[in-house]
Length: 268
Image (cartoon, rainbow, N blue to C red; front, side):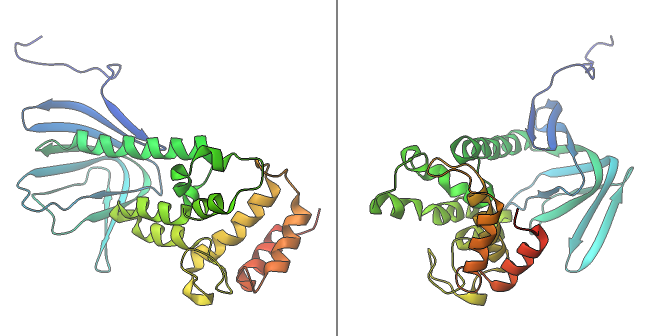
């Protein structure tokens, strides 16, 4: 081997961070320069962050796949063999993976460990949600609700219900910490509002409730009734559809409830 040369083989295990169908691998680094490889599946999103007073350099080369970038109504596509670089962005730039992609990224100063730590924190959050209640993103706030309340088989006390009812607020607070999840935070906060205004935490009514939250309210109720829970057995599809019909126009947006019932179909 030539003096001063370091060789890396594909079988060599490098540091890596993974989140679902994305992976970030550190290939090489020296002083203020690092080289990473980023893999992402179709329909995933990633972003390049904007940082105040940043004087670095970042270069991205598309090894495989296709990306799309949109800004102020303009769409730019990047295909295999294309590249782009920047020395600081005025605002965060969002990309959508149109076809499974592999990117080669060169940056100075290094950013790999910052990105890896964020991926690991999101993975830890997802694991804690799964361990506590096998919940979806809208119930992420349940990680802050004590286990003895979540898993209690007996009826909850008034104080315990108050704590349980805070999980939409907890979830919204957690998601608001990530700029790219702030729209999701608004939906998470509202998913226990009622169409008649008697829900929580804000008492929103009718069209004040985001349509996404109105949809989640219907689907979540159906799932809660048809799934085994610590406090009740699964009651079946017929009972779930009956509850949705009874709640249409009061607990639920009638149009959403009717559309869901039509989609699920039947009473067996």
